[in-house]
Amino acid sequence: MFEGLTERLGKTFRNLTGTGKLTEANMAEALKEVRSALLSADVHFKVAREFIEKVKAGCVGEEVLQSVSPGQQVVKVINDEMVELLGGESPPALTKKPLKVMMVGLHGSGKTTSSAKLAKLLSKKEGFRPMLVGCDIYRPAAIDQLETLARNEEFLFYGDRNSKDVPSIGKAGLREGLDRGASLIVFDTAGRLQIDTDLVEEVKRLRAEVNPDEVFLVADSALGQEAVNVAKTFHEAVDLSGIILTKLDGDARGGAALSMKHVTGVPIRFAGTGEKVDDFEAFHPDRMASRILGMGDVVSLVEKAQETMDEKEAERMAEKMQRADFNLEDFLKQMQQVKKLGSLGSVVNMLPGMNGVEVGEKEDRQMKQTEAIIQSMTIYERRNPAILNGSRRMRIANGSGVKIKDVNQLLKNFGQMRKMMKKLQGGKGRKMMESLMGGGIPGN
Image (cartoon, rainbow, N blue to C red; front, side, top):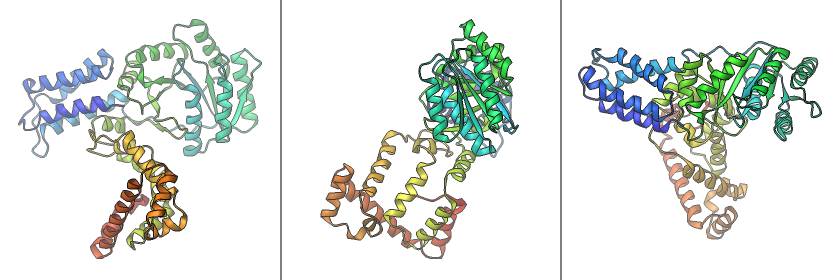
């Protein structure tokens, strides 16, 4: 979602290449461009102004080290300031048990789905046994939606469709959760406008009744500068302990992420990165700053790979590739493993130096098409692609909804890949393959 900001900052850094010393004169234009980029990304104007002043103080007059370019030195200063802007050090993990969490926010910010996502993440990372409590009595089917999410993930659930007393629902849900052995109880509240005093008072009474350990504001990252006012209002009402940013995978400009912590003093704790329950992650200021500045986020990518990929399957695949004994069935399994990491675009964004490389819907569609073609083959055909004659290829094309030239292209590319693997069977090739396949991440 920070593509525009990343691109403009990258251009600014490139323009500083070749400068022997950072002076007020040669920094003026660069800082002007950085400020413009921040404002275009919907960063609050006061935050942008303070940020530029700190960067200027850290850059102007500094001798450029021989080992780095001026652009790199500016990147370092901006990176350090951006980490501070986003919250500095990552907050400690949530480990207290039992843990009570209350979710608040505006209409449509994603509180209900974020409740399930948070429960899923904490159950997987910290071993919590979650219960979701439906305290939204206003939005049609809100309780049904939460119950469905709980059932799909095998979480405990509590809801009272007959009561209109939200604090009482919360109290009853808390009591039942503790009685049933829940170690994490998440209260999903109704969306409200920050100016709706009645609903704000209601959430204050709920807070007093259940005494949550954490109160998270769920905020749509597309809110821009308005997000700051929203966060301030809720913080004054219910004393927020953290912020959850949703829709970080969208095309919003991202100013909310760069403004909310600085203005409210409340840390961003988690971020929603997609529609699936697994598309949710802890927020790390240093990693997010690296993404924004186009330096990637290899740490998060490796962590995601370790969580989602089957290590034994990866080792088996590596051995087959070393022997050049790799068929279309193996290729399909490998693709399905890679898909667990998320969209190709999200993976590419975590790789250093890949900002500006456009990987979007076209590439994802191509991957899905390849998967559909292989799935239209019989298992025998996948394991023995040499038998795929003209009639078989026509049947596969019809079965996968593509043209026969698409099937031919896939088989041609696969054949070239196998030839390359055979060349890598020698000593140096074997070492290269072992290096590429190390760490349990299958190559492609």
